[in-house]
Image 1: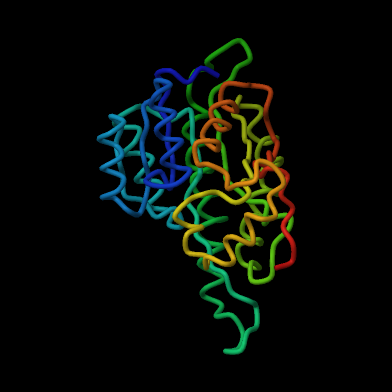
Image 2: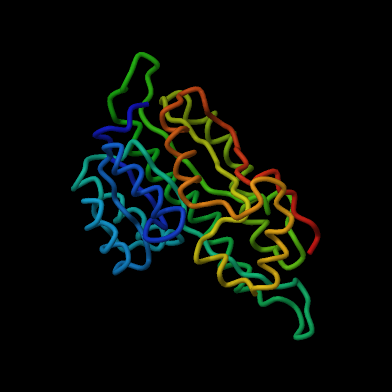
Length: 254
């Protein structure tokens, strides 16, 4: 699918992988709407890439519906939707203080899993009415973000792994459902990405994780996520798939 002149929405677009993707999309000619809870950071990036920024909490139905409508009023209905919004809560199910507070588990599920589904449902509904772009009948593409923690979650990652495992499991049934409308659904499952989210991990734990990456022996760069996202958009045969981006990393139990 051609990127140039397409409307695009990126959640979590004010920082990390979302910001890198918003920049690459803009350079490729897309009209980019950044959806993020941090509106100030979103506006700063939007000014840089000549896009727009909209305050959005992906876990809330009305927030996403309003944000998608606002984006459409500026750029038209989006043909490219990329879900990068997410949170990390590292806590054992039971630790010395007792069981993990249920609200902490719920927050991770609501942002990472329900938030992904929330944009997907609203974006796909709008895409279905668009005219096909090519002879294949393609109307748009949705790219979601999981994690290799969906497969090899570490101790303390139960909530995060559950949320990202749900994103992985949604990929194929969503792609099958939307196939009749020419809408593709693909998920990227990154490994250890050099984003603000990872900086919250203690330094010794961070270095131990990096030491396990076979090659390249480093963190994933946010720009590498963006490059993959753009390739997925342009390669129409990639559909219903989860692609790992991890330097062959397989995480250990701790």
